[in-house]
Each structure stands twice: as structure tokens, then as C-alpha cells.
Image (cartoon, rainbow, N blue to C red):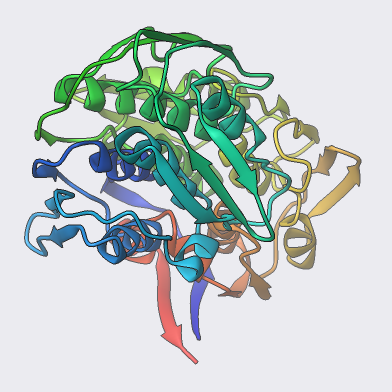
Length: 420
């Protein structure tokens, strides 16, 4: 069992490089199923979730290789077989369900175990299946599995009741070979949706409107192999922005698309954080000076991201005054609150709203990462807590952050990993 130990309080300085986006890389890897030619994904982040989906493809007889030198991932799905995906791997990660759309498009059949992932609330797959049905697939749901089958995929108009990222991605991939035109309305607008569409388009798909709520896909006969570099991880970049803020530090972050982080940057500016010298995908974050409490509501993109809620709560727990965070995306995403309370945070929960009264300081203790982003929040809190913070269940953190303790050490933090 591994733990991360953080000793506060230290000012951070220097610069940090942001990895490519986990939430872009995973659907892009799944989309390689659509093409029987070799595909290269550059700068692939070495994450647990990436390892899981690569193992899943290997189990389906795909040739998957990643270079330890330049993080170049090469995938060849020419010899992929139509077999049931590994149940254990499916249970490890929700994004594993993204292989269903490409398998359905290429073979007209897929059978998968129901997916797993962070336990942050209900994330039903009904919208995925609704889209598959409207494209002409028959869907069978059994005890712990789902099976889709289609003799022929035909384009259709698909309206999503909620702008689900996963459903948008899965339906978009499922429809690339469908006869005619598919229109996805109320589609998710996240940058990762745009990135997947760019990847598919470069391979030869015909996709318009990705990132703007209405996506039009015109079916094509085949796709070609390409080399592609995914976008930077906006959530990792946002996490390091909050690291500068919470430690009263000034750091440079390399790998930032300002537009992708607009809601986070604007809230941090409202809090009193300064940003400067944005150029060449780099930005300087100055977290020194007085900070103000905030009111935040999480929303689908372009609203404030739910994946930044826990990290922002860590910051607000030491900002003088009363802050309010309302979580509208996932109903069970306040599991980190008891862990912050153990460190001395004054937080009260009322349904989907957290009321945070800022305290002068936090105190290090033993806590756990209840999910991926909660784990990042524990690290951030540990950076400013008196004494030592020991974080358990760090496998959650490894699902979404590349060498996080090493990146923080390079900024001057006293943080290390131990095996118990």
C-alpha cells in the first residue's frame, strides 16, 4: 500500500509542465478501434487509467506499445477480435465503456460488463444506449452486462437529455460509419469533445460543430492511420493554479489553454489571484496577497468544472469569510468534506451545497483520497497544513495525475511517496 506524505508550510517557486489531458487521451485511445491502420498518440500521459484502457485493447488482440523515451503510444487494431472485454478491467474505470461505440461502428456488435470508476454519484449509461438505439442498434441489458448489436447503422437525430461527455463521445464514434447524417443535439461542449472530433476528422471522419452543443456527423466508408497530439490537461493546470493560490506562491505553468480554463481563471481572479504573461501556452500565477471568499456553482462546460470543485474547496477553507459551493453535476461529490474537516476545515453541508467558513490554518493528519480530484485536494491542503499530512488510497490520484509528487517537489514542496 502506497501513501503520499506532505509536510507544510512552504512557498512554491519555479515552473511546472502540464501533461496531455487524461479525458482526451482515453476516448482517443478507444477511437483507434475504428481504424485498422497504425495510429500514434504523442505525449501520452503515464496514468493508471491509460494503462487500464491499453490493457483492455491488448486483451482484444490489439498491438499496443508505448515508448518509455518519448511517451509515444502506437496502437494497431488490425487484428482486433470480437470478444467480451475483460470484466475486471471494465470495473476499474468508467471510461472503458467508450470502446462500445467504436466496436459497434466497426463490427456491429459489442458486449461489455457494466463499467466502474470513481464513486462520485450516479453516472448512468442510458444516454449512450439511447443514441445507439437511434442509430439502429438493438440493446440487451443483463445481470452486470450490456450487449449492443446492429446489422446496419443509419444516421439519425439524437437529443441528449443532459449534455453527457461520455455519451457524446460514444455516440460520435458510433456514428462515423453510419449511413447518412447523424445530428447530436444538446451535446457536451467540453474541450475534450472538440479534441476527439479533431482526431477523428484528421483520420478522415466528417464532423462539424464539436464543442458548440450541436454536432453533425456525415458517415464515411473508412478511416486512415495518423499521428496525433492531444490537448493539455486543463484540470491538472487548474490544480497547480490553486496550488499557487493556497501556498501564497508565484509559479509558472507550462501547458495552459486559457480559453479552456476561463471559468477557473475568472473565479481565481475574483478570489484575488493574479495572472500574467500568458503566451506560448504558458502563464504565471501569482497567489500572494489577500484573498476573498467566493460563491461557486459547478456546471457542464463552459461552466465551472465539477472536477475542480474539491481543489477549490481546499483553497476556500483557509480564505477569511464565508464561501458557498453548490455541486449540480454529481450528487455524491462532497466525500472529501469529512477529510478536510479532520484537518480543521469548517464546512457544513446542506444537500448539494457546502458552506465554508475560512479558518486561519489547517492541521496535518491522516486522511484518504476518496476519489481522484479529492486526492488532489488533500495534497493541496497538506501543502499549507501545520505538521505532516499522510494521504491514503493514492491509487485514485494516480488515475489522473502524472508524477504529481515529483512535480510538486520540483516546485519546492516537501512531498514524497512511501510504501507501507
